[in-house]
Length: 465
Image 1 (cartoon, rainbow, N blue to C red):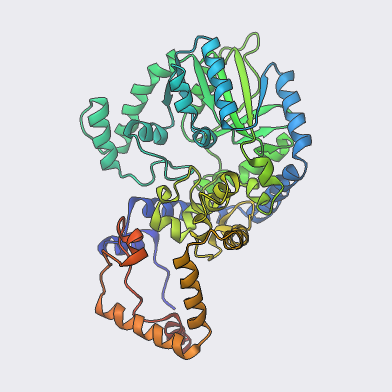
Image 2: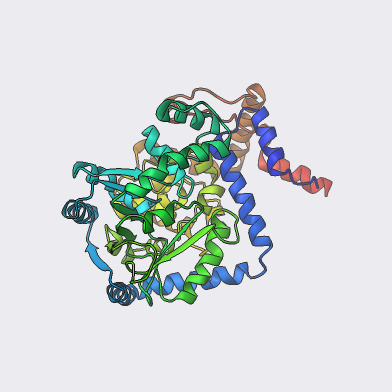
């Protein structure tokens, strides 16, 4: 057997072949860090089991935990608003801003506020909103969209960011990450100190204490929740843990699965407004608990997807995501989790293609810290797509042709041999494909057919064993 190729070895090999992207490099690196962090932590598998049990218990008893959490928030002096959908959440936060005379707001990273398009609603109310997570700041500055759940600009290189900062911030060009961070820090510091409102998401809400836990690797989360006089936390209704002990379990698996760290650099728990004698903190804390379709998902076959803790591990191992990128999903939630969550929240009619954006290899389930069975839910959604007639005709015909070939061994072997001949005739990647294949090659290259089939490679391997 040959020795496994290291990450850097694979990158060098793929770069030489012209097949590597910034997103692919970043996703592979995060995967290797996750595997290394899990390998050094003997209790990782037991913690995954415990984390899964906690999340499923929350979903099974969500009404009880939500009531307990809301009561605890109010006991600590906070305010709770229940939002049935994004419009209600946006209207409430915009009214709050207008009533309090808010002119500027800072935001820490939050997928749920991306989901409801909060920034646009606040801009319409006359509030200037600045994203303060470095990745989200770059996205906002460039007019881009996030491409990854935890690393919004995983698809961009440091050279591109250097050019962006030079153009938009009026600084000298540099592609040194340390200097780029310093430029962003200097630009944002005054904005933090003058902001009237800080807006955050919530990695977890703790039902027993009413605390909102924020997990970041930048100090922006702490500044967002302590410097402005008003803090608004927007939380998907499913993002709860029952107790502080349960939160400790979730934190053990979250950072290791997301970035390969034992613990994120900043893990903050915000519990109510500033108390007498506190040196800092907001005068008001408002927690907006968002449904936005989650109640319907909870009652359906895809309910388990609400156990997701947004670590991004499934994106990093997904061969489809790494090849297509987050923007191809046309959704805030990309990758395997988005292929289930987006059509479940928004309906299949506009997202019938997403359940098919998977090879069903099962890598996402293997990587998930709470063992969500994403492949099974994708199959269920595919069946629903077919049942309601949303699958395109070309796909239905293609599946029928595939079934004919796959059930005829002689025809299958002949097609594989033909593919091998084509692969030997064209070793470089393909720039254009006909018909529906053009939807791929309009935006990226397509690999040529393999010169040897899996069966051929397996026979050669077993003969040499």
